[in-house]
Length: 129
Image 1: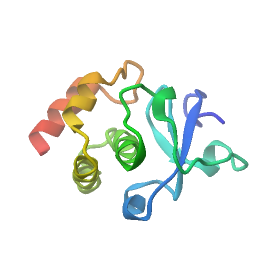
Image 2: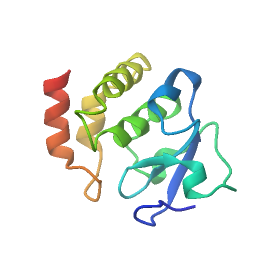
Image 3: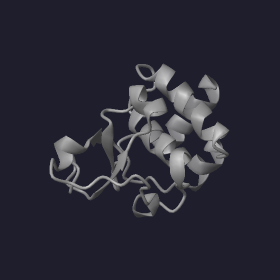
């Protein structure tokens, strides 16, 4: 299964009901290179989707569980902070309720090939929140 934009491998996951309005689909994938999120059906309609995804293939900074899913969806929103502000705020709050320090996560995240400039997005998140 690969990213429809950059052809890199993706990690597929089922989005919990509480986060579905912030996801591209109930079954979503995050690219291991560009960190974009996409419906699994766009990456590989036959792919198996994990209920407990291992985001270590994306980056070891990702936590497990709902916090990791919230952060994966958050990465997918960071291409357009202005258009995705409500989702960004909700995903940050969800990740924090799940016990994750979002800013520490972004400090540890190695996103040199991301579809967004991590440094600029980190500053925008600090201003936003």
